Length: 112
Image (tube, rainbow, N blue to C red):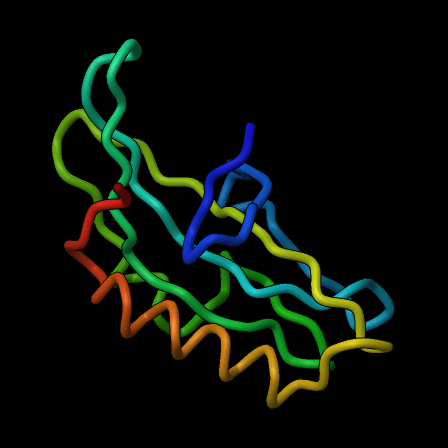
């Protein structure tokens, strides 16, 4: 499954507790998203957006992880946008993450 954020196609959802982007893998911009509502009309809420550093990241150990809360009936998942180092620097990934945070105003804005 995929989710379009800011006109970009993110893949997911992946379990937050198991996502590890290693230093030798393609870096990502990630979106932490809560999915709620009925299966035939789901509602997606952006909780957080960030960029993996070149050194890698484990979302389970992320400093903001305790703040990623879901409401009753929601499930949390991580969506990823791969941004290869050959095309995107760390600053580019951070800039895109900041743009998406500004657009969706986590943790309560819904994806339209």
